Image 1: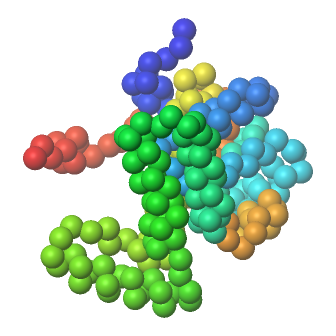
Image 2 (image 1 turned 180 degrees about the vertical axis):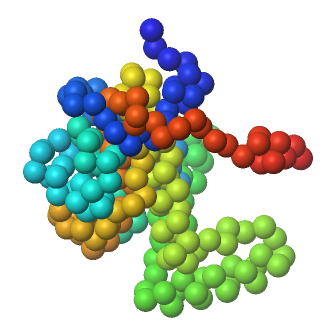
Length: 242
């Protein structure tokens, strides 16, 4: 029986040791597809997913992850990568999609307005936010927007560093989709922060503009792979009704 969302969330733990049992590559691939359906800022989808099943690569990546048990015993690895550098290509892809959706002669006034607003967003707003040169344009935009913000609400995260954070937030949402999907089919994961990200990029042959968001180990848990009971700060300390 499939788990409910709550059951999948409850079942998920960060597993530090996996059984020596193979897992189905196609099922993991489907979970990665589910990851690609996650919410993403401006629908730019500035992410890539590297599904590692090759034994040699797994061993190399385990070393890059400091030979921690979660990496050494993993049967597969999924590496979530941010690609802020691809914003132009992804914006063009959105425009092409809009053109295909609204590719009919009898568009209603509402549809024409929707198409123009969305197209202008990707042709004007996105370049305004993402374009930078050595951080100079980002600072200029930042101070300009702060001044405008004195008079009305405005989007303020316009520096290159801000957009990097945006890309990583979207990638984190995708990673969570993936881990919940794995949990739903009784596969286990561990999102590993500890890694030499430069080494990981070199092993995967990634370009300079790519950044490692998360290395996620995959397999089937050993009982000792759960390092103790779950601890969370009391909910009353983190929940605020406004």
